[in-house]
Image (cartoon, rainbow, N blue to C red; front, side, top):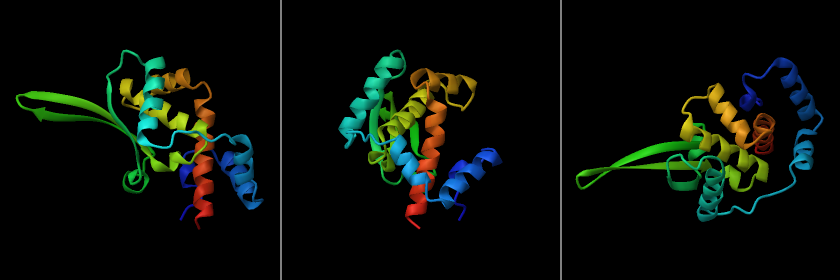
Length: 165
């Protein structure tokens, strides 16, 4: 199993720094020091309110959200940390569409900044389906430090993997 699977695609000098932190047992303490604040978003209702507040602040004119939940199966089944889906259902003679966001349950206990990062990522998909320049511009509009948070989240997930070995 590759210890740095969450960091695939990053440059080798960065991977060497991460390996050095892991070898010195400094990755976990560094992340704990940098991201000490936990969030209070413990259940699906609180998560919906949290996501809706962020959506109302940055994406008022986008489609309404039908459902926002923590999903315990997400990471294992789809190798994703969050998903956004458009669900279409037939009700009588009408077609009803609903948007859902599912967040991996690992974020229930993650630092507050990482929950914010994954929510920003999934909200950006409401406007931009692809991971393109416009998508990342929208992410940095909602969270100016988005790219650093994404890297640190990947480091956090790497640390969680190391702890479960």
